[in-house]
Image (cartoon, rainbow, N blue to C red):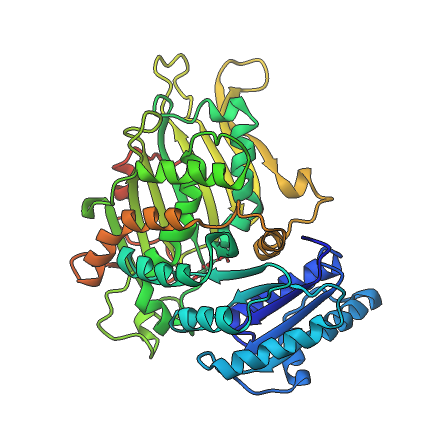
Length: 479
Ligand code: BG6
């Protein structure tokens, strides 16, 4: 499909996601010559504007354009990016878009395949998916649609939305993005686990004390509080991004490397996770500190908001491999640092020969500074006998400095163009993950679970250490 003529339509072209992620990713792929040769990119949104204004808007976010060659590439790229203004709920508008596409296609030899990237707010998802199917579906090539969360707000609304979409677009035409699946270290979980017996063989209840999957951001919801308030941190991060990570850390070896086998294995492990219990939840909401505003200082956030901006949740994987091992998912905004990692903490060695031996840990650091490292003990170098903790450290920038690590969106757009679903969320995967989170989400919405406050820039609510220690976590030097 790759060399085939392609039209990419970015719906919501003047929105944040399109400007900050979609167009920059397309540009990087373009300048690496990874996009089809015969290509047109059409931006579509409601706002009327001419081509130059549009180019100005997206051009601002195309970074790293320094050399003359880069500048030429940027000019060439913008040349293939056109803009069409139109409504999201009118057949005539989509018919006009279709005409635009046909005009571009007439310059190609064999018509073109169409990729519709919906960078849109959820309230227009379904109506746009319908308008596109009805008016813009090509008969000369394949049609694909990329959609992005929020996929509903709970199990029921997700089923309703996905059900409507399914009547229009087939599963093989639908690419549900979870951009964490495009991140290098998240993709690496499959490889490091299943290409290395010395890693995968120790990932089980006999050796592992607990697993922590952590997402920390050093900034709050500034500017998008109103949107955020409807969803909260659990829907924003845990239900999608961290569940995906958990499934890759905990799943059994897939039967093959095919998209369906990989996703079968992920669904299988998520099925063995029961809904989270209220007792396994700690919530937080940030308050003003060090000159930074509190969550509720945002005018678009209701003054009595119960919305968590931090959550620590413990999930249990009830299968032979993991029975009894807590998986703690922590996610928060306005914390002391930005970091995403998976930390497996091993049980203490049973018959301790060495008194000072510290526990082993295996860490995948997703960002910043991609790395995999293992905390181990070694003999104190020199004449004396004793142990010191140290680590086996594979930090990417030191070992692989010649490689360019792509942005998640680059990897995913390329996969969608290739028709590879491995790193996209399947319908049943979405369903099973909503089942795990829906009861606590309802409890939060109903005010039965309430957030504790924590200061902007802190490590989280004061109960956090006690919460994770309850599950066997021991804080090491850099924990
Ligand atoms: C998005 C969330 O899905 O992921 C944002 O909606 C969050 O709230 C973002 O900031 C984090 O993505 P990344 O790639 O910066 O870790």
